Image 1 (spheres, rainbow, N blue to C red):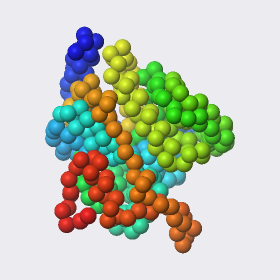
Image 2 (image 1 turned 90 degrees about the horizontal axis):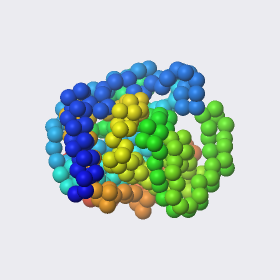
Image 3 (image 1 turned 135 degrees about the vertical axis):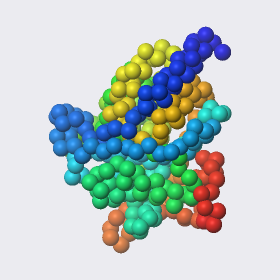
Image 4 (image 1 turned 45 degrees about the vertical axis):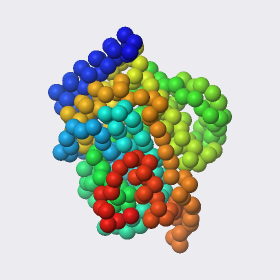
Amino acid sequence: MTFSKAVSRRAFALAGALVAAHGGLVKPQPGLAQDSTPGPYTTPEPPPESIATPTTLPVQDAYTFVVAGLDTRGKDDDQNTDVIMLSRVDVLNGRVRTISIPRDLLTDIPGYGMHKINAAYNIASKANNLDWNAGVALFRATIEWNFNFKVDGIVTTNLLKMPGVIDAMGGVTVINPYDLVDDAYPTPDFGTKKLFYPAGELRLNGEQALEFSRTRHMDFDEGRVMRQQLVLSACLDELQKPANLTRLPAIVEAGQQFVMTDIPADVQGHLVANVPNMHRELVEWGTVVEFLWGETLADGGWNYMTDWTVLPAHVRGWLGVGYLDVNRW
C-alpha cells in the first residue's frame, strides 16, 4: 500500500466515524425542495419540504440499495423516478454491482395495477402532499414485489442539483465511447440547445455532467444509462483521490441538497469509511436491455415490456441476492 493510499484510508475511516457521530452524511432533512431563487437549476414554486425517516438497518457486510433520480421541478409537476438503479454494495469484499432499470418498464405497482415503473413514487407522493416517505414506501414495495428481493435502503437524488455535487468534486473525467450529438437538448427555460461531446477523454463540470447523463435523443435509453454509469464511476474515482480529501466538506454540503435517503447514520458512516476499499475493477454495471421489447398499448402509451417469469431471476443473479419470497419467481 502506498503512503497516499494509507493516508486516504485513515482519513476516510475518520470521516466515517464523524458521519455516524453527527447523524449521517445525508441527514433526514428537507431535500426535495429547491431554492426559490430563480436560476437554471431552480424552480420558483418548489415542492413542499419533506423529511426522510431512517430505517432500522444494522451495520452489515453487504447491502442492497435502490438509487433513484427524481425529475423534481414544480410542485404541480409529476415527481417521477426517471433514473432507477438497483445496487449491491459488498463492503467486506470491496465490490459494487449495479443494474439499471429503464423508467418506461411496464410494472405491477402494488394496489394500482400496471404502470410504468417510474410512476410508483409519484403516485404515493402525490396522494400524500408530496411526502417523500410515502413515495419511497410504494417505490420500495414495487421493486420488492416485482423483482422479489429485500431492499435495505433507498437513495433518491434531485437531478437538477447534480451539478453542485460534481462542481464540489472539481469535475469528473469520463471516456466517451463515441461522438455524442443532441440538436434539441431541453433547457430549464423550456427551450432547447445543441450538445456536442466528442469521443475520447472528457473533463466535465457539473452542468456538462448533467447534460451528458440526461441526453438520449441520439441513442435512446440504452445510451443514457451507459453515460449515467460512466459519470457515477467517475465520481467514485474522484472521491478516492487523496488530493480531493480537502473537498469533502464542500461535497457533503452539496450532497445534502442533492440526496435524500432512509439509510441510518451509522450505516452511512460504515459506507463512507470503506470508500477507499471499493476496488475500481470490482465496480460493475449491468443492464436488462436483452430482456425487453417496446410495445404501444391500447391507450397509445409506449412502454418497455418483459417476461416477468424471467427478468427477476436475471436481476437477482446479477446482484447476487436471494429471494424475498421463495414461492414467487
